[in-house]
Amino acid sequence: MSNPVANLFRIPELKEKILFTLLCLAVYRTGAHVTAPGIDVNALAAYVGQLQGTAFGIYDMFVGGGLSRATVFALGIMPYISASIMFQLLATVVPSVEKMQKEGEEGRKKLTQYTRYATVLLATFQAYGYAVFVESVPGGVVNPGWGFRLSMILTLVTGAVFIMWLGEQITERGIGNGMSLMIFFSIVEGIPSALYETGRLVGLGQVRPVAIVVLVALMLLTIAATVALTMAQRKIPVQIPQKVMGRGRIRQGQKSFIPLRLNMAGVMPIIFAQSIMIVPATMAQFWPNVGATRAVSDVFAVNSWPYHLAFGLLIIFFTYFYTAIIYNPVDIAENLKKQGAFVPGIKPGANTAKYIDRVMTRISLPGSLFLAAIAIIPSIILEALGVSGLNRVLGGTGLLIVVGVALDTVQQMQQHLLLRRYDGFMKKGRVKFRGRQQRFI
Image (cartoon, rainbow, N blue to C red; front, side, top):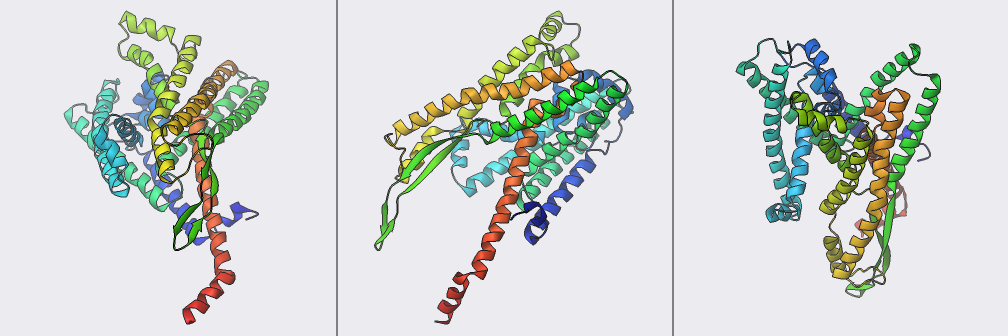
């Protein structure tokens, strides 16, 4: 265990999981470069360069440039993620969906099946919209018409369903969360091209070498801050009293805690906030002759101060909103009461739920402010340095996803290594010898 990296491929089970995950990700990234039939990629690439800062540009980041290249995996994993978020929101207002979430394994299977159906439905609508959009690009389609649209719908929906299946296979048979890893590699794939573009600008003298030093320092500080935000917790102490289990057995009292993460909502507040902030630019792009949309787009232009201020306020709002959706203090208090556990100094039941909710509300404020700072400050500095092309990697959304997925995957690997170490201890220690004696008796 002194060198866990060297031990990763020494454990057969973990080695198979890692190799299977890498194989699936290689298939995913290969398909993300296969162009769909009937599209002129050069004409499309020349046109989409004008759509940075719109909904198209944000979506394209999550699918690794699949939209701008019109690949068979152009929709990526986003239809499945959108369907999953939709059912999470429905669970707060629809009792039947909430009941399925609480039914255990059987309920989760039903919910997963409904999520798949919703994924196919969303992918169909998105594929049709994308086909119409590509037809609007001058010279983007060789033979426009319903034949092309049906072909694109079939291709993109099939690709989205295949990616959904691939992500589930990674989660079940590989290491880490398959959906998160796909977004992770889609974002990381843009690092080489962004670094090359930065080096080209330095060679042309458009970016000074001192800016590179500042950029490296910014990258290290941003990564450290993101890791700190992801790992920070507020631990609420919990006391589990002594209990008689039957036949004279007594369960000793224990001390535990409830971990409340400082950033309980993860990256979702930034995604929701960006979805709203890109609406003016998107509307101005598709309706350039409407004066109202053009005026609003100019006021909330990307990297302007009104844009950053509104973006930060939306992140704070959605942090509280999404935390309230995914974390229910009443359920936590009821589970503690069923186990006979309690928070010292707090009466079990409703008072415990109010206490947990009060603590969650208090720690969400610094968490939301920190989240807004990570999302906004790197973008401002990168724009000032003239290397805004790196905003895709060092921006708040991409960086939080990359760091969060990396930490989760590393933790799963560590759990496998610890499990292997404990197995070896049990097989070589005195416990195994006693087990043989009992079998002979």
